[in-house]
Length: 310
Image (cartoon, rainbow, N blue to C red; front, top):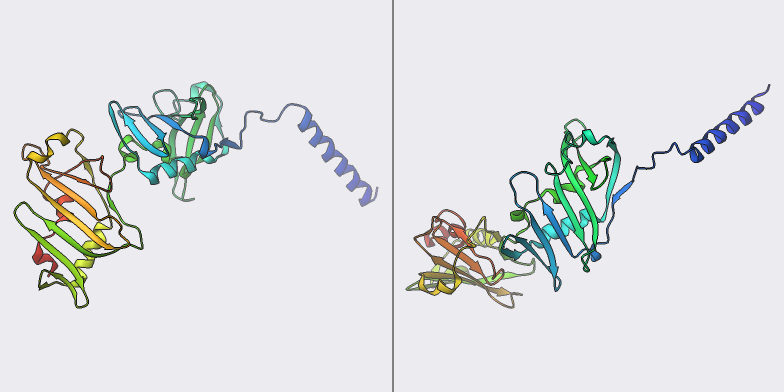
């Protein structure tokens, strides 16, 4: 028997094997290469139930803006966090099926009450996707992260690239908009004011450099200070602050002006000595959010002593 005949026999056997796999029903019919693939434009709200002690919260789009709600508190959502979440929902690809046995769900932390429970809805309130995000496995040698996901109502546990699922494990605070000031790249600060209770101090950029009134400043120190302000966020929220009583507290302001800044950034600081963090801070950039600070926190980044700019 020559080599040509042997080759034909081998090809015939491979074809028969392939057809038998195709029609025998022995393929893994539960495997889904694209486990989650949603059109971000159709996503209108999400209900997220984090594992552990964190309380359930929702994310909802209203008039093109996203809001985060937990209990009775509704706050603007962080745009970058929402974009990351929607990007994650657009494509989660499966690496392999890690388990099919219901008894394995707890091991991979995808059982009810153990994993992050994520439910995604469209504008009409229709449930688009319902799944649990469980354990993270880190492979130091391969420098990779694997996460385990289970679709609600199924027993299959899918292993996926952990980076795709990072947004699903965030908490309510992670999604809150914590930005106090955020400047675009083209914005150039040419002046700012400290408006204090009984006085004010004006800082201006002149051809000779930065000055406070007629007092020359170290321009490098001023620019370093302004670089902090270009993208500054709060760490603690003052959700219980009564804005109707704001006028009764001593206050001061930071006002920032410049080229390509159509409306000056205005930051108001109220001092309530009865609070553990006595400074309550808000800005016109994120006007519906109040932040809390002590003298060493956010407040110290906003108002720098004059001698530190000289």
